[in-house]
Length: 426
Image 1: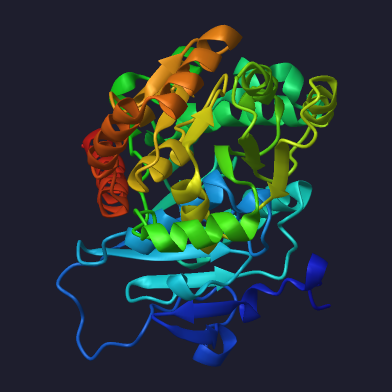
Image 2: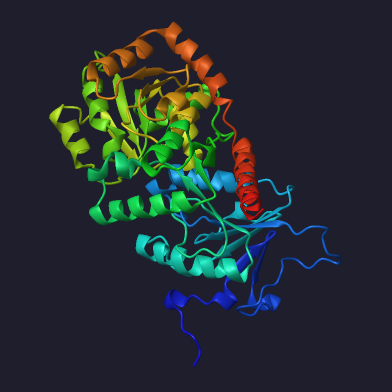
């Protein structure tokens, strides 16, 4: 009796993109259970390359809040993984993307609708380890929190933040339990853990007792599209949007973004010509934000454009008087670096990783201190010399963050994981 698979999954006929070409495994003569190495070569290599299987199912194929922080980090690291260091990458993802069609990389898509959390979990725990065996992978990299229970090879894991431990009441009980138990298990069993900030590295050590020596920090980079735009183009954009002079916040609408504090501070500004623009999709528990806008009488001055296309975001930064990030907790704070790369001053909370993202180029405030935040916003908006200094420092600071370096450092983590295994076996 032939096997049947849920959601149309057929391991022997999965669609694969290899070195820029789409192929099915069956069309290459690869029957289920038999491994076929990639493109056929006329001679055997001197040494087998390290084969790394990467779970990138959090890549989002649709515009929305899911294309925010984690999606961007995953996509950019995959774009910049080095291919000349004896490594081959097999990227497992739901959504195909043009940037996955590059030498040294094989992209494997699935018909499973892994946009749904429960189905993604099932895929991670069943299909991924099965594929790892079939493809004879040497190392797995989970780019989001959890590795398989029964992995046929060692693993590396990326942890973006531990907000579910810092703010447990902001998560449904079942999601909080899953993330807590499975991230702990995965971090403790992984050969290497990648954090995206030193603050995150310390969190993994503190909550999960993972030795600091096993945790690497791979900072995000900043894309080249984030840069100062010509003044006339910025002026046209500002006129097109019709908001006049505005302060900007970029981030998903959710409790830890601490947006009510920003609204309270904005209401205190003696600047009726200023607007506040909150870019980002609706996440969860966001009703308080809209209620606070009404309670403060700010309905005509606070605007919610929702999620905006990636290509448009640099103009939003360029046209803003400043970027305000009052978050109670962040894994890193990518909008801070993106804004600085556009020459926009940044005012951020002195919490978690934000001081790392902002450096000495921005102004910090205690995250719940409304009066202090209002004073910082007023200073930047009304002191041209301070604003100019922050713009110059921000450009210098942002230039330190590179996706090329993030790709290289991720590959170094892979090598360290394999080296650790060699030491254990020795």
